[in-house]
Length: 415
Image (cartoon, rainbow, N blue to C red; front, side, top):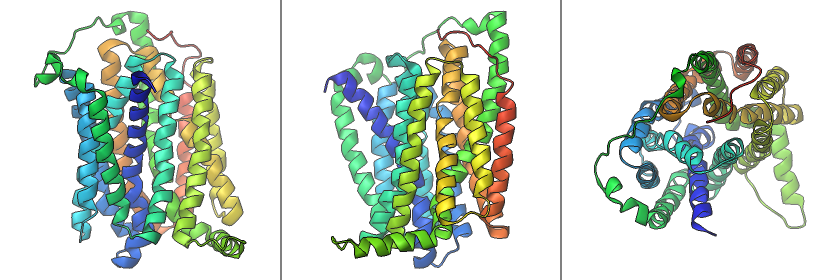
């Protein structure tokens, strides 16, 4: 493998790990801590909330520092920082200690999106497909969080769900540092700060400025709504499956034990397997969307993904077992398929430093909404259960559809 491909692979693995680490606690809380620590699921969610706020709080400073120091250097900090903080979190003895550990994980996890995406869009062509492939890796991290954590809970306990990925990530940090060692030794990177380059800003042109304003309103509006959907579905799905797929998971476990191989699995592992299957299969929608974005105007694609979400969220209300599994697959196809579109829209209407600022601002908004979604899930779940959550998500998807309908039919070519 040449150096360029290895660099892209490290960035993709970094995206995988970013989503893995931010969702380990979702499965740990749902399947282990409610029993081991005797703390309610809704109460445990409150300890995860500061970590998701850290994702938003530190996203813009991470991008700012990367622009003035080194994007590659910040990725080295990302790998080592998130790995070490995950290992430390694995030794938590109280919910407060766990919450502090999750906050530090969130600080380092905030580095990836503004920095990793900036490298991906800077170094390679075919932006739509590159973003889509990178997003698929991130969503596989979402999927694997439930699968790997469920397996480790059953085999080694919940602490190993933090310790094992943390140690692996530190090792990857060593590999990334070795790969880019020559670049990182350059005088500009060795300096604490370098002056950010000044570029012309095509956003000053009146026609492009008008287009930028219109698309920006839609991008930030849909970012807020879409990240509420993303967080609610990816974080809560293990708990939803634990409640809604009881008969199905029990039957799967019994079937596995009755096979000639006499396989063995616990319910926690099976919940993780089913969540992984839904996440992994639906992630393929991003490859399709990425290919379409390089060929078609994004409005029609955005409308389709929003419509799919609305339909399957409505079906999920009251659904259990087989119907619930199919409905979950349906709405996750819509949720994941929507992932690359806003980043692609920014690449089409903003250029130079304007693009960097828009990416930074979008990630701050996205992660702030992601953090605020956890108290919302807790509030709704305590009072009405998951059916009310799916009513809210249905309305949310319709609101996204209304905003997307306002997109221009044709956007300017990327510059």
